[in-house]
Image (cartoon, rainbow, N blue to C red; front, side, top):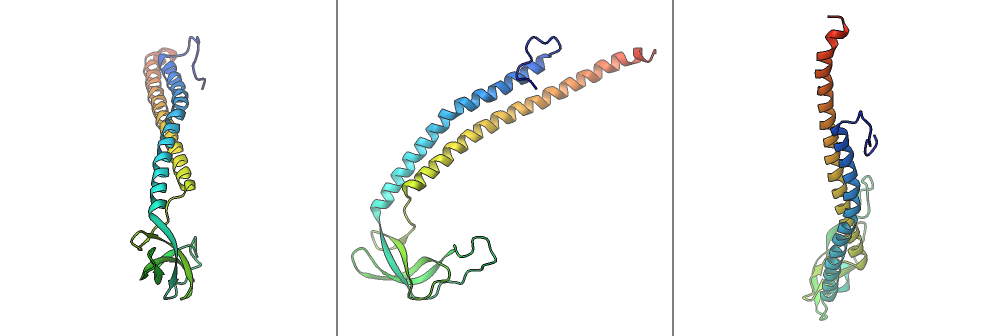
Length: 186
């Protein structure tokens, strides 16, 4: 299908409409790039600020497991990468000993040291976002925005194409019903 049928005398108004709508898809794709870039930039700024805040309010530490961590089930996808709560001890930022559960990988023996992140009161918290996490989040947000714009525009164009095609087929049926009896000689 040509984008625009041009001066073809057989082209119908619907053909020109569908061509124009698919041309609009290209326009949306082009305009969507800076929009997606702005979304990605805003997301990166927000995630970078969150990363800075988390890094400023957490400290890395080592916890010693008081029990064996669960054994991994090697029959599952990603086996060995699971993290489960395990009893452990660690020292808070002020040096006081603490005891509780920390997230640890599977197949670790009691007495193993595992890295943890602590908040200012000495409680385990998730690892802070890194600059790489912020970059990946921003790239995903920008790309997702652009794909959503293009998919929406393409869906609208494809829907219009289906509607126009059905209208053309109904028009052909009506015209054929009017002309066909004269072709049979009746």
